[in-house]
Length: 270
Figure 1 (tube, rainbow, N blue to C red):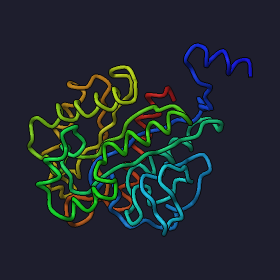
Figure 2: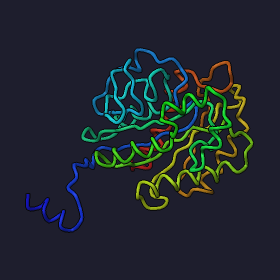
Figure 3: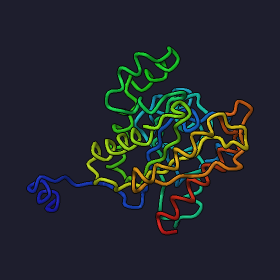
Figure 4: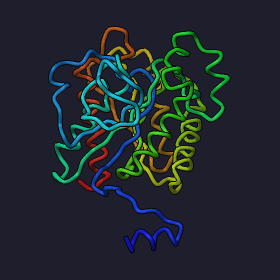
């Protein structure tokens, strides 16, 4: 009681933050949203891996803004398997048992990176109805929902990094790395974090060898670390893809998610 009073006298509040609860923000388009149909193995609960629900899903028994065991689907009520699933599972399999992992996933299939910029309204207004309908599930502001949830997570744990998979809809856009930089800087600023303080891990599009229709975007993705000092790129080489040349199979997502996880483990010193 005395400690609480002293904190309040100095304009601070007591916090229940768990320093061993590592939280990661993930966003992007359909591959991060989760395109593949998940399988039974993807629904096995790991009590150390949690998802902060981004939208109300009656069919899943989940409410927005609450933590649940992180089993597919992680994004919205009827999405599929994506890299965030096995990113988290890779971390819990390799980190000390007292460390828990939390995921926040706010992704919109088919979107350009412009949806996550501050002046996103004009982009949404000019988008097709199907994209606008997905955006409505986030009350019209996916970026705002990401920040809303991240602030909840800051009371529960420590945000340790950002995961991105986006680029198919911006293929050939030479300004894309700078737009990503702007979104990254806005996230840090809106969460009261220091510039460049969080690692940003971005994944490649489906590779040319796998028939990737947007594989030409991969060299541009590899320029991200020259624009964002704390950015890292994960290879999609040999990650199994489906016939559309845009999306990965369930096996491909498991491997890609593992690579995101291995990159983060290295950054965490493991």
